[in-house]
Image 1 (cartoon, rainbow, N blue to C red):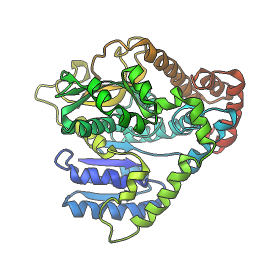
Image 2: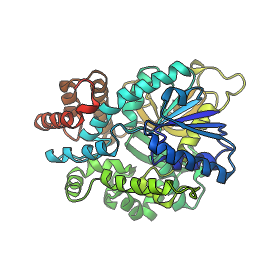
Image 3: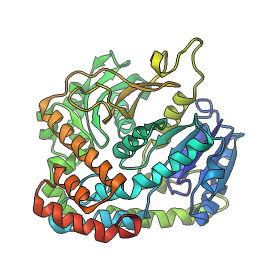
Image 4: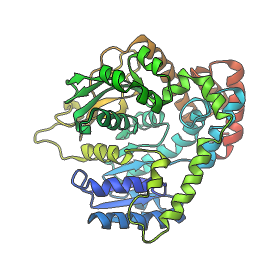
Length: 433
């Protein structure tokens, strides 16, 4: 089994390698290819990856290359974790929207749109090259904004599933608070990528007892503190929103904070520089503790679980997609809506629990989404469609329309100013600008 990681030069990669090494019984890799145009980073991370595998006794072969076609050749699955423009572009995404009093963030608002415009064409080019060499390969997308990127991939007919670490982070946190193994905790997780709510926390599986009221009663202060939201808000909602809902529920407070401190991109860039220095040490054979501050907690476990489910051999007699899933693992993924949330188009991408197997991802049925949440989901879904159109076709007017549709913007004056700023800061990455 061969897996290729596009963006293998990321400082995230040792986290992923650590998961592959520890969980080799779940995902028995024979070959891992790290692909990245940044050859200098590969020369640090590639040898470290080999040392981590050796430390864990993993027999798999690790290679690295800046040649995409060679790197993905023969891969059964390709994991995408790239960042077009690097941390410098992210820093801009997080700063220029503040000039209009709007949130600056790399996955939502105007900054998220900028990232989508830079990223979608690059990802689609990679996916087409993968398809030409390996028509049956799965693409696992961890590249943000995951919802928009995954929708682009699925619209073009690629075998793709989107991945985010928010759900697995909540699962691990709730399991720790409950004093049970993570496998005993299932989430009623629903929404769009980076716009989700935990409506239930079930012990023993999807049909188990809902202990969310107990968690809020006994640990509400700690949960709220992690989210940087008021405890009273969680009690009033009766759910646990993802951290990213803070950009909507406390927008102006976030803007005020962001104007008084360095961007997250600046913090990450400093962490990355130190990580690269650590990775250069030939004695290092495990992921350093500093990597936990880089973000992406439990990313490796989520990636292993998803990839293993997609590549598991079909059950005897199992049919293709038309026959429906015959078996699989229940995992939270980003995939086609297909009626899961009936107020959204079928081709929208939702983030929900799904049965994942060789057939792909089949979302589990969801109870109706409360109007308080459904309205926001509907608005952001409309924005995502317009963002995808702008990424695929270009044009300032399409950028303006996407910005105007976003619930965090929604005013013509702001949409016009932000459109001009977006183009000014991203011309080198936009072929049509």
